Amino acid sequence: MQCATEPSIVNALTIDVEDYFQVSALAPYIPRSEWDALPCRVERNVDVILGLCDEAGCAATFFILGWIAERFPSLVRRIADAGHEIASHGYGHERANELMPSAFGADVLRAKCILEDLSGQSVLGYRAPSFSIDGRNPWALDGLVDAGYAYSSSIYPVAHDHYGMPGAPRFAYAVRADLLEVPPATVRIAGRNLPAGGGGWFRLLPYAVSRALISRINRIDGQPAIFYLHPWELDPGQPRIAGIDLKTRFRHYVNIERTEGRLRRLLREFEWGRIDRLFLDRPAPTSVSHPTTSHRPAASHSHRSIGG
Image 1 (tube, rainbow, N blue to C red):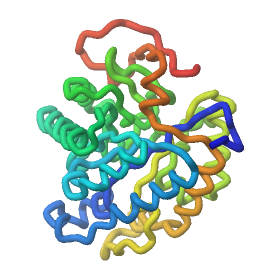
Image 2: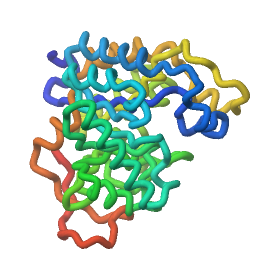
Image 3: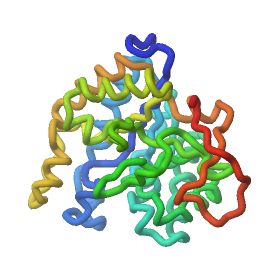
Image 4: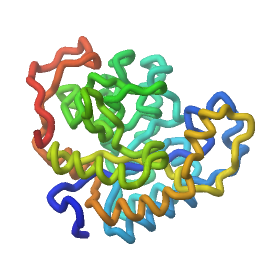
């Protein structure tokens, strides 16, 4: 597919494969023990996304929960057979900064093994639930290296009430000598990093804003934009959770009926690909010292982000 807007830049389309009841903000209202009793809609919603990708002729990276993969193994195979990258979202959607190092290591290794067995692909990428790797848990990056991952997309360089590390680099960098970090898209305006990578902002703001921000990253920064979305964000028919607070209700449901149309347009107006093919096939950028650097010995480098 030839991109109509920025033909020289291929951006990364990423999908965090979890169901509506697994969202971190809903955890106080939906006990983990009830997950198996709730109606799952993830298969239907991922199939919609697969159809949109096929329509646009683009590939994507799917960060899949091991919990989902175990219950829907044919879904993992359909994603892989359609030419998309299989990557890990951990096993049980537990935030990395709420786990002990040993539990985190077991979680990411378990998910990796499940996904590799089902897909027949090497699983090289990981994204922490709710972008929950930051300055509080740099050991998580060492755990990913130990589990055999080649890259992470878990450190969001923004200020947010649920996640974020505003001082982290905006573009792909070697956070360890043998681990690449590929952050979600941001733009730098008035000395602040603003989210430009999808999720709730893609639903909240007019489509033209997302289009302009991605175009700015491509045109001014000369970088690929890393865009993310959840399958439940395309599903206005999902069960409504009773009793949740107004802020959470707004964040979860705002403009949910518009997402599918917006995503179809986004896939048509930009060119999209998989993280592994966009970043791991390039010469690795040098590493950078910032608060996620651990005491584990590593070579000393100066920072240079991909393409910049």
